[in-house]
Structure formats: C-alpha cells, structure tokens
Length: 125
Image 1 (cartoon, rainbow, N blue to C red):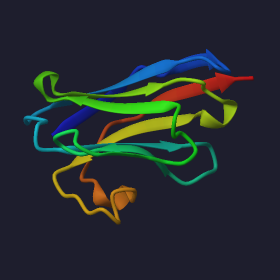
Image 2: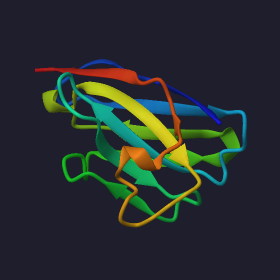
Image 3: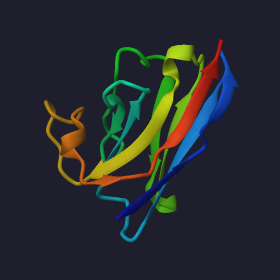
C-alpha cells in the first residue's frame, strides 16, 4: 500500500490543521494507522494510533485532548485533526500503517511497514 500525507502548513499558536493520509494500491480497511512526527534534531515520535476498525484509538500524552485521529476506509484515507496547536507541535508529520497490532508496541515506528512521505507543520508563536 502507498501512503501520501498532506495538509501541513504554517499556523499560529492556538490554530488548527487537518492532516490527511491517502492510501492507494490496496484496500485500507484491514490496516491499523498511526501518525508520527519528527522535529529537527529529534527522533521520530508517536502521535496517535487507530485500529483498523476504529474501535480503539491511542494518543501521546503531549497531544491528548487536542488531536483526534480518524479513518475512513470507504475513502481509503486517514486523518489527524489538530487543534490548540503549540510551537512544540512543529514537526514533519508522517502517517504509517500495518495490518499487525500489539498493545505494547503500536507506538514504535519499527512496527509499521508502510509510510507516507511526511507533511510539514509549522506553528508560529
């Protein structure tokens, strides 16, 4: 499956953005999806996760209550709605997916076989 992330941009502190992740090549229905981000000079970090059937979602503590992950298998797409953005949210955001799932490893980038190219989010103070 190929993924393409989009929707990044420049936004002021407190603003909102909606990232999209378009999937192609295979049906997206059976795939769990996650968003990761990587700020300059830092390691890639987990942001949010959603099970293939949308029954479970998990968030990093730093974004809980501000970000919402969703998945629309009919459109072969996933989303990350971001609100109350802070300068520390500035990063390159990646979507990733895989059919595998484990409750203790979903937040590791190594668990995902397919990645989008990243979309840049910049939050100005």
